[in-house]
Length: 386
Image 1 (cartoon, rainbow, N blue to C red):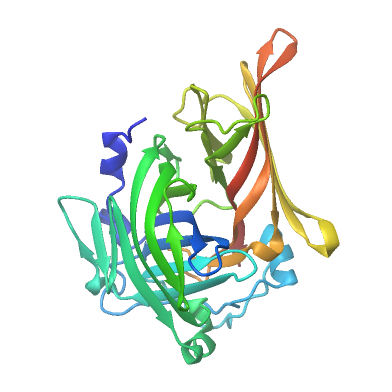
Image 2 (cartoon, rainbow, N blue to C red; image 1 turned 120 degrees about the horizontal axis):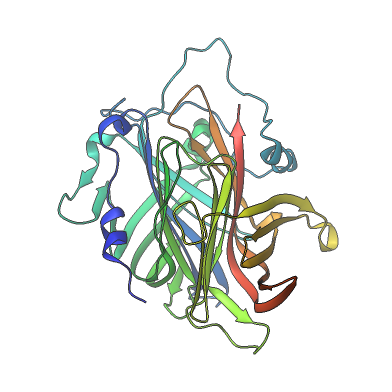
């Protein structure tokens, strides 16, 4: 299924009008790669984030201090949104304004490297999607760039939320499956531009080279923009789905869930020719949903997170359960455009596994029409630090 022209158009830069002083634009890319030296598989992310560009175009402004490592207290606090404030309450209110490029690796070697730039150095191609900042390029089919953070800067500037090290990449990608835009009444938007996305190329992290293959990357990309981020932030998505009826990979099978938008999650899914769109503007826009993300015990004292979603309307019931090891995850900070030191802390992973079940209602009975094993699931949950 080809990506729609509407998706291609909407993927462009959005911070115009009032959003220039009160808005964010975020492009996210996830993929697997394999070490050229060891053959080990690893998962990576790359992001481009623009916040309040007109507030301080000549220099970037950050408003918070944060901890670069995932601690047990962080894990618990992310669910409740009750982080201890590290800012003096008497401090003058500051509004963030910056362009950021962030990239990192998940798993036992988890690391993120973040660099910030003033908006005046941001180059926007008005004719097509092509954005440049420093040595970093984001276009409709290419991602290239490099980031570096020294040990000194990592220690001196905890607000960068960056470990020390270097990462560079030269990637081409093709979006194979997309879904329509999801929006809310309070000007928050989500566009799953590539729920099935094929990446190819090379990435180097701290001098270790990784090869990215389109057949094994299980890539995903999307775009979030508007006046602020969804809170609480809930996201799971995958395009590595195996039918538990046939035991075979489901060709072009994919799903993505995100929210909250108007106090609900949105579910977009394609399986064996069937499409399910539970969203405000979707075909099934009248539905009930129960969802949660909680820590649960794992094997050998390995704490896991459990994402559970149950959606139903007059025709279908959809149940999804995802588990991801906490030790494979990163804490990612997003400074919210409204300022006042409001920071969305997101626990982010790319090693989620679980199951998806879709039932069709037949009178008072439920007929299981899709049952799939889920692997390589982007798994994220976050709340606001007040």
